[in-house]
Image (cartoon, rainbow, N blue to C red; front, side):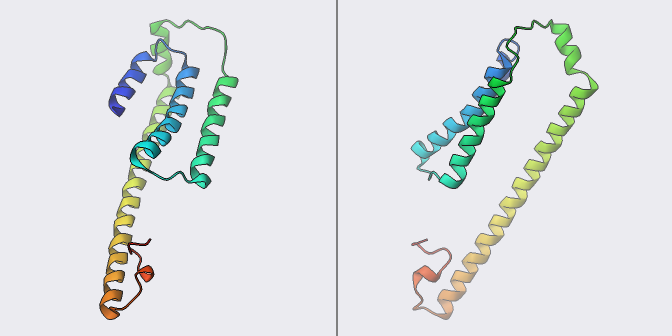
Length: 145
């Protein structure tokens, strides 16, 4: 579904107002938040989720508020010329580097999480083995936590 949405988003780029597409993309994240709460039972964390929602709505309103309201028609060749400037390629490079960095950091966080889970599981196992009468709440991965 994500790929269909991305393809549809790219397909309408030449025909839609960029301001509306940017605001729609930002607000789609909020929609995903509510869907994940409703469909998957995720918890709404006020400290993080509400702050993110305020920033997303604020950003979308800023984009709409500061946008150029006049209609500008651009020919296909002029658009291609703009997309192939040095400035555009620098932008593509920065986005590519950011994507690679994000992918790398996600991999490292995932790796660190697996190490933490393994260490915590070993800690719980050793604690249970050495003291069978231990209270379950003292364990890291107890059923109560």
